[in-house]
Image 1 (cartoon, rainbow, N blue to C red):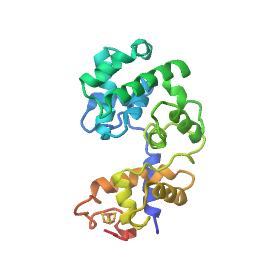
Image 2: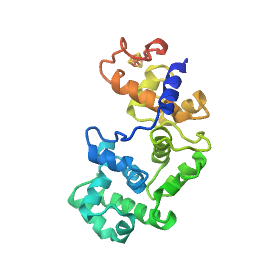
Image 3: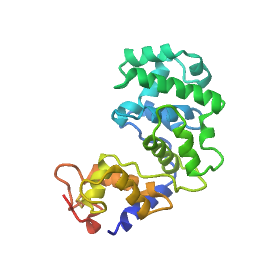
Length: 245
Ligand code: SF4
């Protein structure tokens, strides 16, 4: 399977200069501005990543903003002084997540970890050109953070925030529905392939940075390769696609 074009697009996207405001949630300037401000409020991005579990991403990314607004502070030292009960009350009052009690604890512990381990500065997680494995490992140390969130966080840091890492080997593809569908239809993996198979296929295709094809597959999935009525005529990957629909 020739995935050259997809890889090229991924590399081009990786090389693009950093944009001022990353779009985490469509048409939500306030949330995007908060999450994009990793110079001043890096903990907002980290806490947003930790919320991205078992709910739609749009719903997860807005949680830090709502919690900060409710507590009337986004200062990490002040956030760390709030009790678990205060976080639980906000999560349940605002129905922030499918699992309000669990995720309130994840949020609370995340704040405490950032304060204690990183002296209140979450950017220490990725500062100083660390290896990609170390950044993924540091995310995994947070309560409730699995490999999917950890590699997604490292991928966003590398590709969107342009954080320099010593290497990119440990940044895997994040196989969401778009990525899975595109990889399958293109004939890159067999029909019904598991997420693990997609991850290992991406490692085979571009071992020095497997996650590089993540955004190109995602874009193709969103723009042309929709679950119903894929628009193959206009799709940028049509020349190398097997169209296993
Ligand atoms: S050519 Fe068609 S099947 Fe292939 S990726 Fe594009 S839209 Fe999907």
